[in-house]
Image (cartoon, rainbow, N blue to C red; front, side):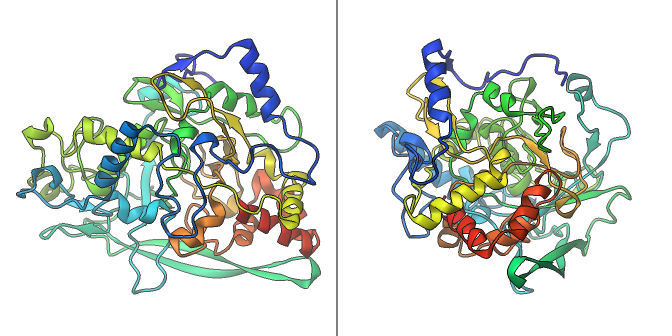
Length: 491
């Protein structure tokens, strides 16, 4: 891996670990070999930020448990901005205008309903508000970033449709497309004569309003991910993530996780990618800013164009009136508002584990580890020690993700590279909160495009580096498979 500068956590105000702390961290993150009882602290998935698990749709919408009074106020203001329904410009509510003109949702909350997971349309009457298609084309020549970051794929926006397709628009503007999904059944024979039917999707960008896509356009479906624990993932030391990487599979276990390296517009340098399904953003701030611009069409200090993702080919969109008010420092959301939404996103709490001492859950945890799932879904980390009363400071957390890119095989491939990730690679999804999906979001759709209708279906779609683990799960006794699912539901 070659970058122009060493990878550092320059987005965080950190205190270096002492030798004693490093030893303490190594001790506390070493996994016991005894699977017969709960492990120390594993019930508190997010350390001191963990909140009591609620059996209501608001389970993912709670502030971290260790916020100060002042931080709780910032959380609630950020929540208000996260829920704000933006309107078209000009409007009497200057702080809320600037929507679109082309967009995927009117608010952050519309995609991340209850701060949970999105889903594909459930039939012709259901909209695709929490799902869209990313789009890019091979770049005609490498960009400057390619000289800074080895292995970065040279891509560019579609010349007509930009970086993602928007299916909603303001009056007088045509939405870019309508999403169409066709499924084909794929049957998987399991042990003990069990048969599981997967659904293999084909995506079509139908009713294109601004002409054809580029002949080399690459499309990638994305559903909105859950929001919990993002500030803790951001606070994991970069070196702890890099130490887990094995890009050349030197240990011969078939797992070759690679770090995603992306360019930070805020810090003007390469950084470790952490957020997004292919880890395309390095910080929560930059993830938030790109979502405002791409999903809602809201300009901000990082993405200052008032027309959002509209391109020069969409002249009516670029010429439309936008909400770049002087009161907002020339942006539709200013730095103060962007920081508040970022803080809200960083401090959404992770619910406590459930049923950690249940015998079937304990058995399922053992199956999870002995099958090899933990080779990518790394159980725990200790976050940086941070200054300024940062609530993510020095927490033992259990996200069950190594934050690295892994090849999951052709079955899950979108065949669209992003940064250093190729068309078959995805960042390991954190598993915390997995068992609360039905409670929060009202469904059990998983994976990057929601094709899996259950946790078992999600497992069976894994290939590539996870192929051997998948085969073990297919062939194991049904009792062990059921225990594995019970363990995942307890997270």
